[in-house]
Length: 631
Image 1 (cartoon, rainbow, N blue to C red):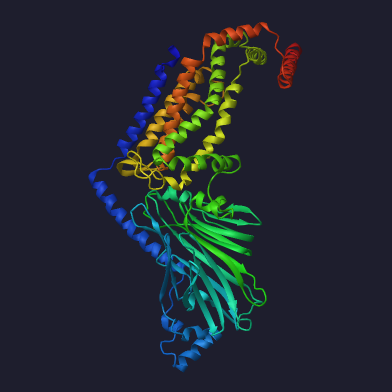
Image 2 (cartoon, one colour):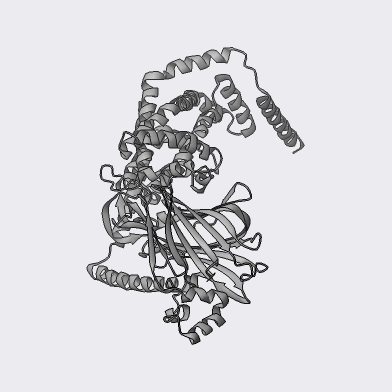
């Protein structure tokens, strides 16, 4: 029973760590005058940042040209027509039409509302009708000029950009689908067409780029590029956390999925691209094509500086795609997707889109896709999200309890052997090689070794890591409340700090605190007494590591999804409970000791590895003896 108690050094160490944290908080607490100065400085910084954001938007996205340069107010004005022909060639015709003015055409279904401008023919607003951001406002993926789609081509020795020209809109029906045709006309029968087809109750829409009768107008011997740019809006409370999972992903070379950097600026030139996802954590803007883009230049620019700056945008994405004409024209059948980054939705399209989500690589992704996601979806079908997390944790812990049982049995055997191991240490304290030989011999006879205790723990790592990647990307947690947490996909703020602590933030989250306490208790139960006793010379102080793990949980998870911290809290509480049950109701240490003593009387065969290790140690011992003789 003595081993369950905390020794004095442990208590003092834990109190000191807590005292240091409290002292740091007190030391950093600003005076009322400093608070006022900080508030004024913050307002000034936000004004400058907002001004800079607007300037960057103007620099990175298209500037509206004066309307008189793009359209003719009076179609009978021959001078204006001639001037426009010099600038646009045959496409000056598009500026003489009634559609040559800034007008918006709206198409929508039950989940998506799209607004398309005559100028450029591209989507200028994409609103998700069933979702809101953390402030309660609707989710906009495109709005206020944060995106454009441009076709760059050569026409009659002129380089033209479709984003600067006026398209003629027309709406029709294809069964239940709404079809919007936007035509950039060189004449009545010669045009470039963007065709949008919106399907009822679907985030995926048909999109195509085609040409008709422009063989003598567009020079197809020159490269034709489609340039797609988008500045991703911030949607969550913690901009740093959201930006960590905001990333450009793409599929190329027949199924290979790659990603650009989620933190710094990055760019890549790739070939045979099938789809591109401008992912904004829980929402995605995607372009998919039936004919792979032969060449694509992709770039991602990080716009987030730090958590303290109230930034409007997260990333600036760009994809410059080479289009290949066939038969003198373009004929690309594509799709666009504006909607949730949701595994269940992505999976139904059967386009490998689920690979655009951060599910983990290799076995971690397989565990998520084939076990955790289906199980969690089943639980959330009839349980609130917070309760579903608890039940998910219980099921996983019960499934892993046999592994934990083996781990504890191995630890119990090592505990029983400790007095004999201590005797060996004392007996062979001047002969390390002999000590290792006798230690391995004793452990082999008893059927116990530190490795046997580690292996079961290693078997649990794939599941734990899979869950670590699952919770930050689980769309089902978004804006779901539980206890004091308003949103399980964001941090559970219970107190607002008047200052910002590096790495920690300007708020206190309760679930990470509870999880840290549970982790500390668990580590004390499993390693608190044995770590320092078995400390090897030259190795890191394991007692310090025992304090460090809960501290890291407390600090780094303060801005993470509260659903993940809830899982860690429940998982460690359950682990503690299972260990107590195993220790007091299943395992009998006296029986283990008796069994070990019985095993000692039986001849024990060594496996090949053990024999090899014994031989190597015997050789080392013999060499040591020879060296002593020579001396």
